[in-house]
Amino acid sequence: MAMTPTTERWPAANGLASIEEAVGAFSLLRDFFEGAIIVDAQTRITWMDKRYRELLKLAPTFDPIGLPVEDVIPHSLLRRVVETGRPILLDIMNFDDRQFVVCRIPLKDSSGAVEGAIGFVFYDNVDYLAPMLDKFEALQKQLTRAQAALTRERQTKYSLSSFVGQSEAVRELKAMVRRFALRDGAALILGETGTGKELLAHAIHQQSDRADGPFVAVNMAAVPEALLEAEFFGVTPGAYTGADRKARQGKFELAHGGTLFLDEIGDMPLGIQAKFLRVLQEGEIEALGSNTVKKIDVRIIAATSQDLEAKIADKSFRADLYYRVAVLTVHVPPLRERREDMALLCETLLEQTMRAADQRGWVLTPQAVSLLQAHSWPGNVRELRNVLERAAALAPSEVMDAAVIARALPPGVARSGGPLQGLATAVADTERQAILDALEATGGQKSAAALRLGVSRSQFYEKLRRYNIAL
Image (cartoon, rainbow, N blue to C red; front, side):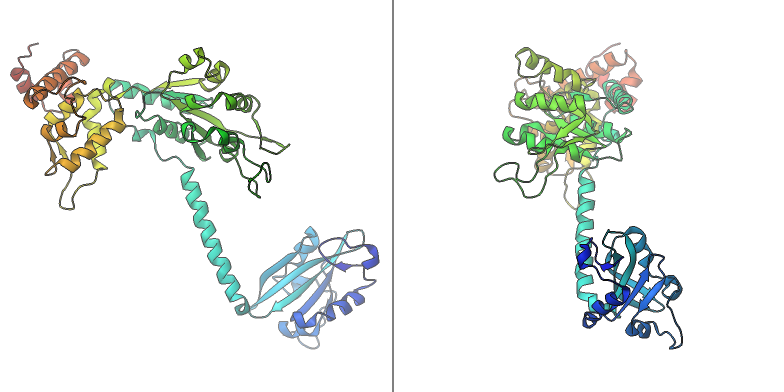
């Protein structure tokens, strides 16, 4: 059978009748390479040109014909080319203390069977390739940096320890999150805005079996309705006018093997809800403009500050989708229901708040904490962060006292949303109420109440006397 030096099957009429003819054909190309070698199907050398012999510094009396190629060229990959039938179009091969730039191509007969391979030496000095190698290395570094950045972006940013608090409500919440993380069902996180729902979604993913997979987040309120289908399911080239020429993966495909977090799922339009439900039921997606169905393995974690049951009642949210995403439900308590976490929360947030170079750290007085505990916090932890940043800008020193906090709080608010009172009265009232709340929460145990408020026992007893609180 005739062998043709090509990576694809040529018509039989184009084949060469013998190795000799192949050698003759390649001799026409000798100006483009420094040496050549041919092996048969058993990778025995059947031909080697004179220049290759000289490159290898073979003795004039040495005859390589019939020898396995590795006996003559130890690092040759011609055997791999013969076994796989696939070319190695550009490579650097070591020989003793030198390096050759080589190309290897399988030789196939008219029926496509591999009968051998041919190898070329383009250069006997890799310096010729230095500009191309430098460019390739730069592109490789850019690609590595981009992949690393994408990996970081799709990993979780928070752990359960990032959710700050020691109150009973927070302890129960964290225990529930740990239990839910061990399961693989869809989870729905309910809570007011600013309570830390996305943080808990990150925590559930991080503690689950999917922790090594991607974490992909989508804010339903931030994506225009017209783009939602493409955003979730992806787009094939030319699916619609203006579509990219390259396929674009959707969020389901990007999250394969990991978690897809849907923030503000209550804002999902009805038009996409039915398609979304089908994906959850079938575990399959179909990109826009495609007839190919792809299997996906994704855990859904959704979050909302809206009343989904009310939206079901007014038919703006599908009941069947609600039951699909609410397999495991987490209720995040608002800040006003865990006021005893205020001091710890402030300490954590102030560590992240900018300060002057000569300041050692922010100091929040007990009176200031009491004033913060009295506020109703409709914006929850997010609002608290903003108030502390405002206070940091107003504070003349690193000490934040009640006067600074009163200026940083929203106008007209002193305690639980009531009218602004005199500062001394407001601080006294809020501190007294905080003490009463702590005593009630601890069943009247003074030591536990003092610990809850973050003050010493002597300070606590002094405050009991000051506010005429008798037990």
